[in-house]
Image (cartoon, rainbow, N blue to C red; front, side):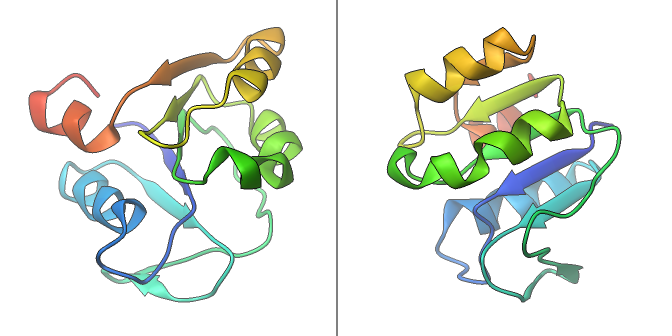
Length: 119
C-alpha cells in the first residue's frame, strides 16, 4: 500500500480532499490528511502545519495553484515518489521544481485512479 499525504484536507465532506481521504482509507492505503485547520476525516486526524512524515510514496494536491507556494518546500522535503495534481491544482511551475528534485508528477484525479485500479 502507498503512504499518501493529502494536501488541502478539510472536514468539509463536499470537498474532494475529504472524499479522497475516505477512498484511500477504504483501499487500505496509509493516508495522512494535511490541512490548514484541525479536524478529523473518518477517524483520521487532519495534521496542521508541516508535519514531519517519513517514507511518503504519494502526495496528492487539492490546493489551488495560487495557494501552493506555501507548500513547495514542504512537499519537496517529503521527497515523495510522485505528486498527483488533481483537477484545478495543475501547476507547471511547481511541476518543474518537482522534476528538478527527481519527483514524478501526474495530472490526474486521485478518485478516478483509485476507482479504475491504477493508483
